Amino acid sequence: MPDKSSLETRFARAKFRGWHRGTREADYMIGGFFDRYHGGWGETELVWFETLLDEEDVDIMAWALKTQDVPEHMAGPQMELMMRLDYVEIPR
Image 1 (tube, rainbow, N blue to C red):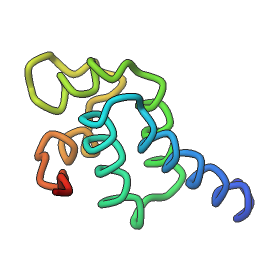
Image 2: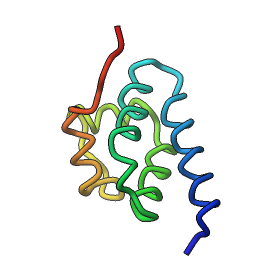
Image 3: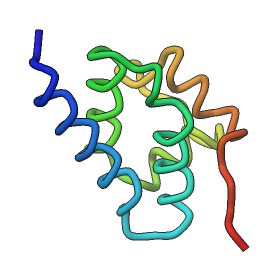
């Protein structure tokens, strides 16, 4: 089991990586997903998100928008939440 400071560092890194993807659309989708749901995450969910962050933005967005099949290693409850897209808030 990771120590608390290590876990906090990983969450901080995941947040940064989620919000700094390179396109505004990906930032809102991936960073917004992190902001909405990370509060209830443990190690398992964080590992899933860290794995997601290693994927290409176009693939992540296609999975969330249901225009491309989700690969088995990314499928599950967290991807189902991501596919709802109810967490995306676009500032004006």
